[in-house]
Length: 176
Image: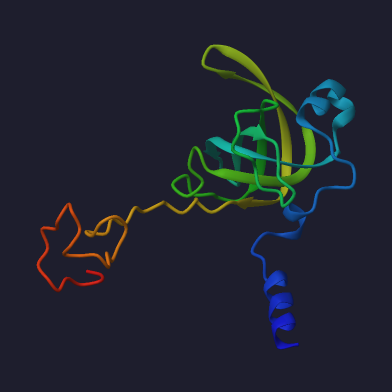
């Protein structure tokens, strides 16, 4: 009973907001929104992707996001498939050092309209959403490669009779 209660509490303590974890009842893609044009205004969406840029204004922040497909929990996938770019308008200040280019983000909100800006010299029409909530996904943990000094991956029970020999004196430590 105690283990089940602990598991239940751990599941409820997820740092991901509910509006990010759960998709809206009617899922509308970025491509569908573009095709519908002005009729898409007011549609509730949950989109995510990779931060491509950040622009802090006086009272709000605009995040340019390269859209990616979302997993069941709302986290953007890391493939190269995209439906385009969109702008998320978030109230307040977001630190560009934290919300940096390349970070994964998921935004939930409503479609406000469309805005044409240039990407390089190319005029691009963005879908603009007013963010009601967003979640910046944690950076993936870096893999560290710990190399033991012993053949092949740690303690060798056959030392010192191993044909390759060792440069370490006997007895050698199990770990540094």
